[in-house]
Length: 453
Image 1 (spheres, helix red, strand yellow):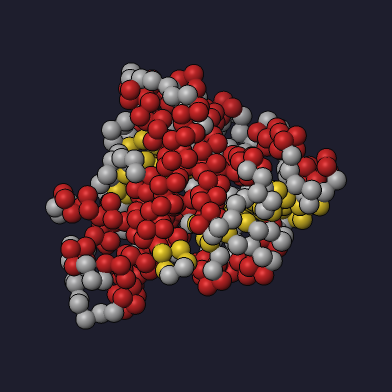
Image 2 (cartoon, helix red, strand yellow):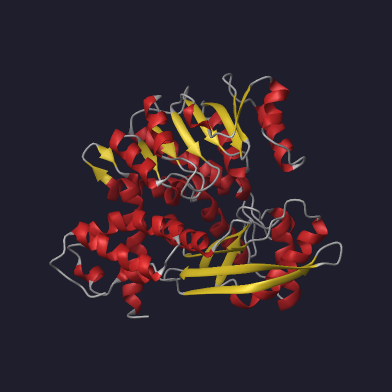
């Protein structure tokens, strides 16, 4: 696509997206993620030919490489099963590819391309030397025995191992890939390579993992929220918070919110949400952690245990609140949900999941003056801690929890400062704009330094 000075920013955006959709047909998640970035980057670079002429944004939206492979494994009955594996290595301009592995039956190439593209900007914002990547499989661990999960992970890593390395690509966990899966994956990589290196993050503490890794994404989303409220001249003390999800991100976000004086009144899973008007307590949160991590039960059991309301088949965005944290999955919060939150007095939203708000919902928040933190900024705490785990592995050391918490808080504060720097619009901060531009500049400048690659 040639450079045309005569086009306005809106015309350039339309032209850019038409070309991207033509090259990537049917990949709606990827289109959405790119459009959200391009809508702010194209106006920013409109008068900056050093970014426009070499087509830096176009190059960012074309992954360095995409690896797909067959994963064959045997179930407990001896049946041969076949799944598809992926690794999208999007951009390594500022460091090794870094991003999670997702095992879920809904995994598609479009999903992983959007996640890898977002990861590039997110990792850039942390200030750590990490590029962007993402991978996974359409494998469904539900109903599988530990031995079946082990055999799948070993077969998956047998194929993936030739494409990763501590200085090349360092995967981590994501949906469907927790401590159990990381252990099996790391063990198989060690078996194949005869090397003990920091090729995966999210590892167990007994074999190179880092303290605070499980808490980091949820804590980070709350730290960012705290900074947004401070920018507005208020605090989390006494605020009512609604959270979606009930996994690590949601539960640790709830824990940190409670520690900072907020009242958390909802959590959810795919079956619906619970509304506890008295708010979670430490005892109730421990019940949820045991329910989800040990018994693998449903959130409705909490409602029965504590005599609170359970709303089947819905997300909690209709509940009145001061702040909201979508921590479940992508596109879980639509335009109508955003309008309900605004109507009910929500003043700030911090995304704990990856791209959980549809573009129309984001537009509602921005138009209403709600402080809205996009996931590439708000949930960067997880990958920031992964980067710190990589540093510990490289130096053969382990940092104390207090030191890691301080580093996490400092990193989230710096990300907020970057968003304010590039996103200020009069008295309002457009955190979407700030995160996109702040993440873009570092990667773009590195790409320019390398010439045409």
